[in-house]
Image (tube, rainbow, N blue to C red):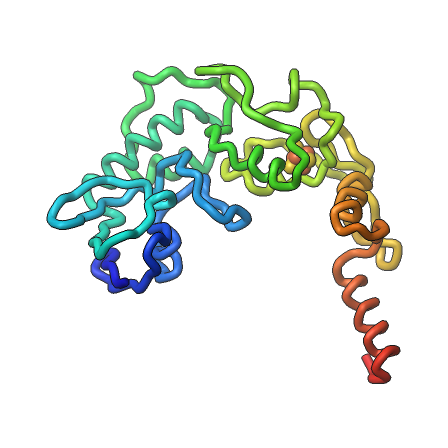
Length: 249
Ligand code: SF4
């Protein structure tokens, strides 16, 4: 099937999400809650809205969760889209007034003043839920959404250091607004109020993660914990192959 995005003809499969098609064709649409580690979009931030024309009728859709089912025409940056994106950013900026990335985007899209909205002071989180999704996809589930309305937030149970968190930092890595504090020095990593000693590669000494993280990876693979970094593990594998098949490494 062929659709047109900003005048460019793009080939796609029926049912493919519009944002995926745009990205594959190097057409940029802003997003916060889309992350490569997640297969599907979650439509939480709504910044990826675009204008779709189907059989002469125009509508605004959220591209990361909009499956393409007919030969549509798409505008990613029309005047209406820029205006509505600006309004979405004003709402996000009142939810997360301390987020530099949202302030920057708000300026870029000329977002209106946030004066009339209730601000969540000191907040950087836009409640997209990517962090909790990342943690659940590891089958850990240490964090989730708690409370309602203006006090809604992502937290460990009762805000206490979590007994199940493995300190992997996946939640902080996927957060689009740097709202999750991860503090790391030579020896330790602290996240969600819990401090983990860092383990080093037994061969080269590079930091490879927390003990809990390594043990969890071993449990999932059904093998003994491996205390080598990726590079040293690859070198070990190459040596085993060389010994087995008799070639030089
Ligand atoms: S650091 Fe803890 S809360 Fe964050 S993804 Fe890893 S296990 Fe989950």
